[in-house]
Amino acid sequence: MMLALGTAAGCGSVTEARPLQDFQWIAVDNPNDVHEGIDAAVFAGDIDLLGQISTPTLCFNLAADYGRSGSDLTVHVTAKSTNSSNCTKTPGGFQYTALLRGLGRGSYTLHVIHTVSGGAETSYSKALEIQ
View 1 (cartoon, rainbow, N blue to C red):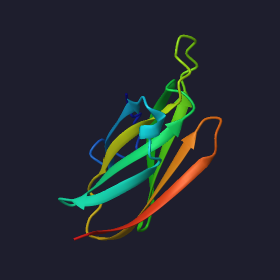
View 2: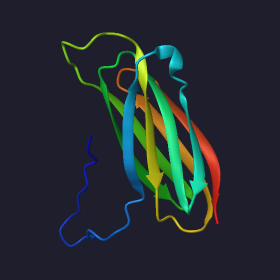
View 3: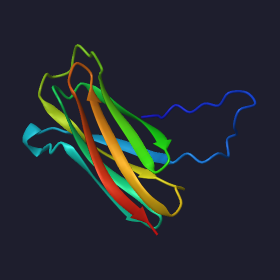
View 4: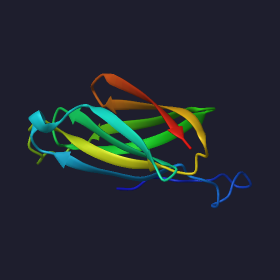
């Protein structure tokens, strides 16, 4: 899996902080083992994020993006269908992890939005303090 990164000419550099890092996900085959939601904790000045998202089948790929407005941090996790014809139509979901780095000390509200193509959007929030 990849995160696409880009900069416009003259607007930024490769040394700018990228707070959302190490986004990784794995399939959860048994739909009964998927517990939709998130958990987040501060560890060594970073925010560690763990989430689970339900999908109609296991024929999905996950992607994440990040935005910040003051002390509000938003991670948007999107599940898009692979449209694979040879994929089994078994319900399931995915577990994912990510790190938010380089935020600095302060109080933050983390908002995580789950979007599954063809389904409803869900949102979760958690207050966190980096000391």
